[in-house]
Every structure is written in structure tokens, then in C-alpha cells.
Length: 92
Image 1 (cartoon, one colour):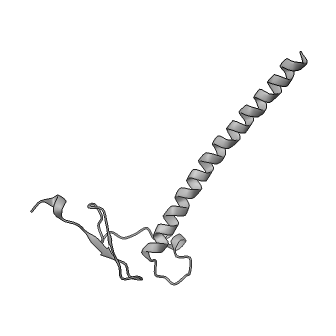
Image 2: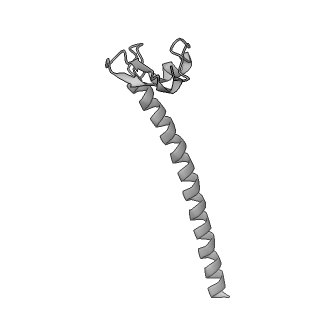
Image 3: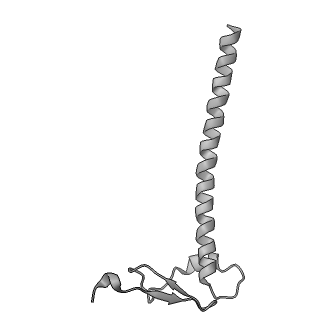
């Protein structure tokens, strides 16, 4: 049997839907308990796939907002410096 033709699916405990997973996924691997405590927002003790996806999406958003904010601040500084240099040039 060809390994590429085998597809793995995991059933969500909350919704009952089946989601495709990567080939290297091991369902018997114990999850990181500290991360699960961060993800479990409602305090039910059950972490759904949707909660994990929302947590990962927020982490990516935080990362990109920080990157874009740094770039925007740098651009504002560059434009401010160019404006000051132009004023010095005009007054000279």
C-alpha cells in the first residue's frame, strides 16, 4: 500500500466532525499541559479543536501586528527625519 494514499482524520470531541491531520501527527503523544491551560478559556477542562485553532490564530495575529507596528514606526521615523532635513535645507 502506498503511504501517500493513506489519509488520517481525527474526530473532534466537541463537534463530532472529522478533521484531516498531517502524516506525522501522533494522537498518543501527550499535549503540552501549560499550553492547554492557556487555550481553555471557558474553564471546562475540555479543549476543543476550535479553541486550539483560535489560540493559534491569535498568536499569529499578535506576531504579525508586532512586526507591522515596528515597520510602521520605522517608516514614520524615516519620513519625519526626511521632513526635518528638508526644512533645514529650505532654511539654509
